[in-house]
Amino acid sequence: MDERRFTAGLARFFGAGSRVPVGIGDDAAVVENAGDASVLCCDPVVEGVHFTARTPARLIGRKVVNRNLSDLAAMGAVPDWLLLSLVLPRGLPARRRGDLLRGVRDAARAGGCRVVGGDVAVHDGPLVVTVTAIGHPEGRVLTRSGARVGDTLHVTGPLGGAEAGHHLRFRPALREGRWLARQPGVHAAMDVSDGLLLDLHTMLVASGGLGAELNAAAIPVRAAARRLAHGDRERALQRAFGDGEDHVLLWSQSARTTLPRGGPLSRRARQPIGRIVTEPGLWLLRDGRRERLAPLGFRHAVAGR
Image (cartoon, rainbow, N blue to C red):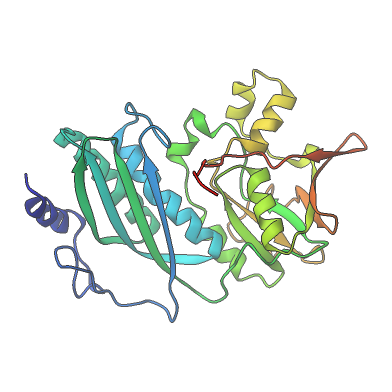
């Protein structure tokens, strides 16, 4: 099948819609914006980095969409459109390609958005799938740069052990992000993708070089992290700090704020895991002691200066 026949098939597979005057098959898509501003993000998944050759293709498709929707969730945005770029290994079986596309479509439908364009190429290398997500804010946009001294820190779900399967099956916290963006006492938010400590460090730097204290007893540890740590509490905590691919939301809010009852947050998410402090750096409070923490997490090694 050549590229043009494949693209024509994608137009039928993903469909059009009432707000898509020009969809898949032209040089670019034309869509009707749902808001006055757009929120855009782009994230790839690469075989050998984000998944293996044995990973079910449908889960790969879900993952690449949901990684991007998690970024929109952190901004409090509503997803509208997706652009899909496929770099396919030469000879990829049609069934695996179809399962990949079904995973993309499943996740798009669950997130309330639609694929409206993209591109495809074939090469003698690994599978690479990239999604660009376009959404809109309902009002205020949350950023990672708004944390303030005295804020409490919270996460929407447990941490660590994502490699046991969560990294393929997570649900982007779209409802939570939109709800948090409507709360005036919430100051900053971001998606936890590279690890709690590294992403918190990123938030602190973006907010002017602040620091944070975390309460060891308050960190929600995923059951998979405890299993992978063979029941060792310290190793499980370290996994919660640095494993990454949790795709929960981390946010800061005024310590004087009591979030309204109802809404999508769990009771656990309403309980703080720490607070923002003036002294730069990361600190762990445990058994009456204060320990310095390194910003653990996943970092891509980019060559050059």
